[in-house]
Length: 88
Image (cartoon, rainbow, N blue to C red; front, side):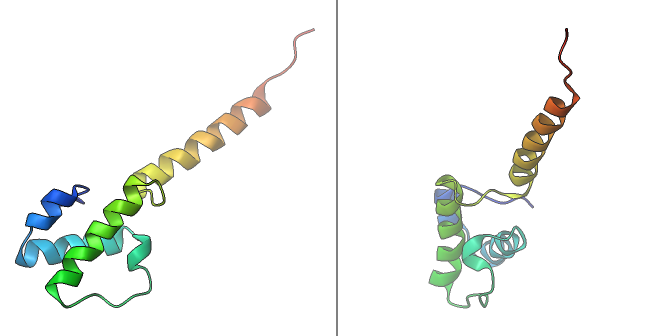
């Protein structure tokens, strides 16, 4: 199962599907779910992934592979610059 980053789709989830999404967001280390207890009320369960989507859309939180690709691009650029030699 993949993270759903669409608030409308999250709003339509019910039961175990909604709880599974909450677990996936927590595993993906959504900032609003780090170090907090897992909500038990349906409204709170629905709100937590929705808030995480807001954080993602605003750029405050990057999901797994997005973080890795950003970090690796920067590292690759630095490495490439070190390999350059001036031609005389």
